[in-house]
Every structure is written in C-alpha cells, then in structure tokens.
Length: 116
Image (cartoon, rainbow, N blue to C red; front, side, top):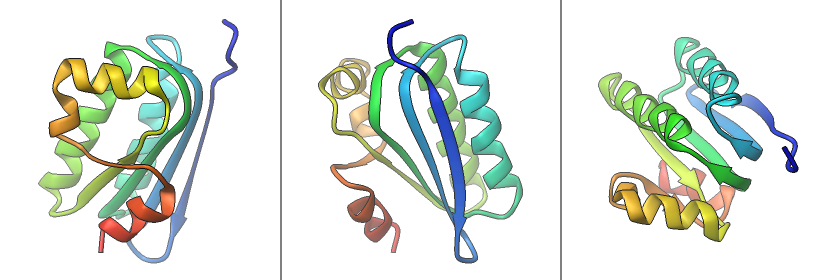
C-alpha cells in the first residue's frame, strides 16, 4: 500500500458535515470511511460534503459507501456533494455512471456552496 489512507470528519454549524479522505479507499479502508459518514449522519447532519480530492484510488466497496451515504442523506431530506480532483477517481465515477448521480465539485468551498 503506497498511499497511506486517512479519514477525518467534522461538523460545521448545525447541519453541515465534511468527510475528508486521502490515499487509497478500498475494501480494507472503506469501513473506516463508512463509520465516519454514519457518525455525522447519526448526529443530525443533513448537508454532507465528501472530499475525495486527495484520494488516489477508489474501489467498488468505497463506491458502495458513497451510494449508501447519498441514499441515507436523501432519505433524511438532505443533500450530499463530493469533491473530486484526481483523474483516477474521476475515471471510476465516469465509467460507473456515478458522475451523473453525484453532485461533483472541484473544491470544498464550491461543494459547500452548492449545498445552499
């Protein structure tokens, strides 16, 4: 594993949460990603940003966490955006058609602004 995985999450204001990922998000690291995501959603976050700008690799397990997250947010009447800047992640989202499912942005500020 060449790229060290990291995940952090923070709540900003009443209903905004941000999850920041870096490195390789795969079958081994996706559970940590899911845990961070669910902690924010369980705490009442209705507007969620998942920042993938430092992600170098993403697999189907991680995509499943993203899909589960967006379903849960929408089910609670909220919205979710993602930050994508790396070609490998853009390519996976494009090939899988998920680029049409997610609201994708080039910066975290743009993603937050898009949530309204």
